[in-house]
Every structure is written in structure tokens, then in C-alpha cells.
Image (cartoon, helix red, strand yellow):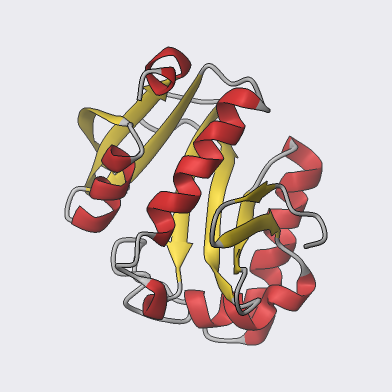
Amino acid sequence: MANTIIETELFYIRPLVAKDVSGIFELDSNPKVHTYLGNSPIKTLAEAENVIRLIQKQYDDLGIGRWAIIEKSTGNFVGWTGFKYIVEPINGHVNYYDLGYRLIERYWGKGIATETAKACLKYAFEELVLNEVYGICDVDNVGSRNILQKCGLKLIETFDYDGTLHYWFEIKKEDWKNI
């Protein structure tokens, strides 16, 4: 697959492109997907196009951004995974790599987020030569908490993020090597 960054057993992970607009729309227009993300789903294809442009700008400006997950067997857009370089302070941290993932609802509960996030961590530590990666999730988002923990991230603390309690996770390269 063109521009593949990472390949897992079942998925290609690659930069988001304009043709992903319908997948981004299906993903980010679903209120259930936004339950722990501020409850502000998008409403138009133009908003989905803008999401892609903003992530592409992160590729250009910061050298990294969330990547599309493409199912090998069908070519379907499943969601996104990967890193965002955080340049605004969150929980007293700034200029760090945040591991994230978001899947279209019909792909939930199949281990996809865990499989692709683990592959992204391998990429982070072996290709990007990072020393640590962080992750956050709403304390009520049990699914996301479980994914981060399955990937080896350790729960460090709870903090207030825009008025909502969140968990702060981290994994250091030396700890990842021992998983």
C-alpha cells in the first residue's frame, strides 16, 4: 500500500489522505465515538476534510500526526492511530508524543486499537528513537484505559483536563523493551 509506514498482520498504517474523507466522516460524526472526547461530533463532509487538512499540517509542521488504519483484506478505512506531538501544556507536560487511536464503531472490541497501537510503539522506539511516549484518557473510558495498559503504558496519575478527570499514562523505552 502506498505510503505505508507500518504494517501489522491485518492492517496498513499510513498517513491520512484526502480520499479518507468518508471514513473520517463516519468516524467523527458518530456521537458514541465522541462520548469521552467532549461530545462534539462533526456534522459535515467539509468538517471531515478539515480534520484531514489539520492532521496533514501536523505532518508538515511537526513531522508526525495520527495515521489512517486500513484493513488489508478489504481496503476499508477503520480509524486512526499513532502519535500527536503535543506543543501546548497538558498536565504539566509539553513537547511530548501522545499515543492515540480512534476507530469506527463497527470495529470496536476486536483488538484493532491494541494491535495497531503496539505497532506504533515499536515504530516510536525503533524508528523514531523516542525515549518515552505518553497517553491520556477519560477516567470513565474503560476501553481506552485497557488498551493503553495492554500496550504496556503505566498509569501514573489522575489529573483534571478541561474539567474532566483523566488518567495520565507513560511508557519509557527501557520498559517497552522488557514487555
